Length: 338
Image (cartoon, rainbow, N blue to C red; front, side, top):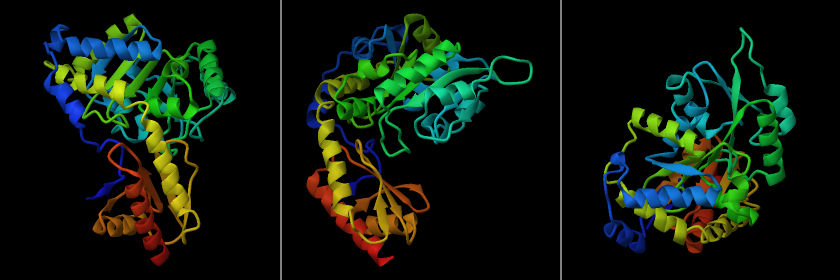
């Protein structure tokens, strides 16, 4: 059986989750009549300490409708290096919402950097309207923001009249790693997007949360973007099951990621980045990512690419300790032979 470390989105529903899907009570969510969707939205809002939430098909839609609701065409969004909403969402900020971005140099940044980047309204510049933060940071190797730094950044943004958005696709991992709550990490944000498939094992779906008036605006944009779903309770039931049964076990994924990194320590022609959650970045000093990925695939180990000489491996509920150690042996041998 293959060891699939390409992403934590490749998981398959567990037997218990499939039972929850099969037994879901459903209604037409476009009419606001699906009880499972309502329950999911209420649960996510409560977990994040926000007033309301909206179930959407994908994390990309969650981020994009939230940022659109905060802005007008021609506005600017401050983001981190290689932020998901810029790198992996098909240019939607510009194409769909008419927004431009100002990318700060690090995967995390400071309140001072926000103040320096802010551009006040004038006839010649884009108005800087939103600070968008990613926690954990996908391309940063699953690193977590320091909570006091988060509060300083959001306070600085609000003092300048900006809104704040948290791309919390893997906020569940950040909460487990930091031994804190999702609500604590969401404090200071006007909107938060969370993913139910990354890490938690649901087959599809994300949720955007915020104050009630804001979520009403997002609801309109969800419809405009084609995200209104009918009997969506079969999907929401999977999300509810994931929230209640798969959050605490993320600690196992973090432990397996550390085991992978430790097994690769000292291997020839590679270096492993800092591991905080379930993402392991492996930098090659010889050979190429493409060659290692191809060689590993031939041996039943599937890996992701994060650059010409950077491999990305992500642990999840479908990979156990034996699997990550097997992957480490394969990666180490291929890198040593390059």
